[in-house]
Image (cartoon, rainbow, N blue to C red; front, side):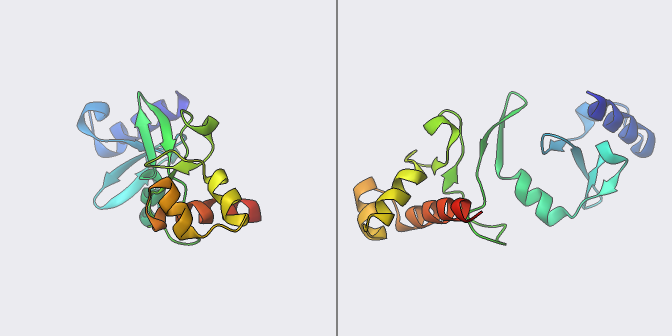
Length: 148
């Protein structure tokens, strides 16, 4: 609540918004509050610090919200690629919050286990009834996590 009050005070004082929660669309990463002003993304919970828009927006767009809470996260599966596909999702409703394929909810861990056992990407895609790209992204996600 402290961040919210700080942000509301900031936008009222600096932008003259009388009813900021009605007049503006706020974005959040779960910690800070951001507004777009004159083509710039501003962290209004951090006294108006300008944000490197491209990267922050890319991260915010990989979160799905319901009832003011993040319910799904689409992790980046490619190093240094903010446009990596949303083929893998982390959702507590599936596989106890471990990464799964977004469309079919197949565990990425299961895919990697079968791949390491010698099955090809094409065989896995056929068995699971999904696209080759989805299998590749599952492998990137899991193998990237293991390397870290």
